[in-house]
Amino acid sequence: MDSLEEKMVKAGEWWTKHFGSASDQNAFAIMNKWNRLKDDMQDGRLIPNYGERHADNLARAGAGIEIGQKAAKLIAEGKQDEADKLIESCLSLSSKREVADTSRKIIHGKNIKETIDDAKKDQANIKRAIELGKKYPNADLYQLLSQLNLETNQFQKGYDNGYAKLIKEHYKLGQKNAPILTDEQGTAINKLIKQDKACSSFGEAYSYVQKAEKLLANNKAKDFSQALAQVKDTEATRKEMQNQLAQAKVKPKAAAIISQAQGFRGAQESHSQKETVQPENGQYVKPLPEEKKIDWTKPLWKNNGNDGH
Image (tube, rainbow, N blue to C red; front, side, top):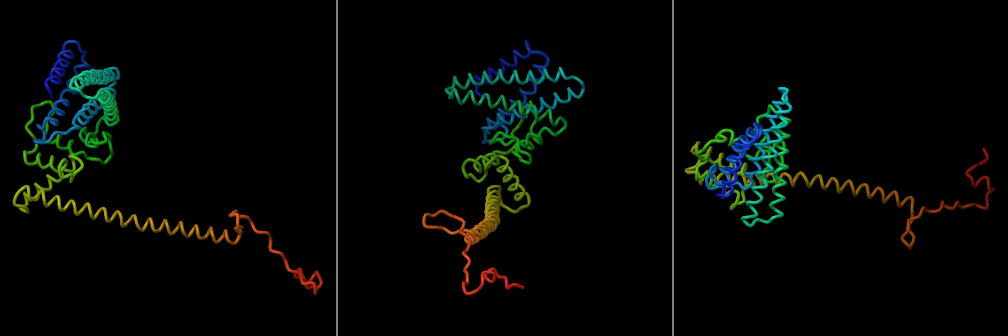
């Protein structure tokens, strides 16, 4: 967090404390502790030597889910008005923060249109997270949060961003936390994603680190660096095998489809040849009925295939 942002947060805290309603204060307390998580992520205090540029998305989603779950429980207790005010306060505070954040970014020379678009996106995100929390009031908050794809900023069922479980197990919201991972682990995650391009997300890179630590604990590597190299080789081989398997499955299907299409086309052509002729102008026409040959040496009644019996 830069000095200007820090001053804005303190100003918001002062305003809420002295002029905000009870619901404003409740909403601010929830949002502020998640905002601290964002700062720890971005500044590398959560994971040493690694800052997450999507930290804002995750922190907003976490705050929105918690607000939504709390509102749902208030509604279940018959406190609809209190629930509505809590959500309204959350959205109002979020909007004020976006105005302040947009001003700060413009002062720092950021593109105005991109900054405004980003603010609209953030406001839409927290609304979506609130609705998710309301829909699943008794679900594990971190399980819901784990399904947020930080790259696309969409909730995907079955997805795991890797952060939520880590935060749940090792991070205390609103408190001063020591780094969760070691400097070596944080550096490795940063390198796996940004330099080696071996991993596309934190969740994937963190799983590599966990597997390397397991190899080390089982004395299957002399140090963390060697263990991580083994994991990278193993995962690269696994991915290649998966690609080959996927291609092997696709090719027979494609061949079958082509064969089917060719068979169908052949049948069509065969049928067409029986029923049509193609004159020189390329127009398909139905042929005239075949002209019957008459044997003038026989009576006409015999030419009809009738022998008179």
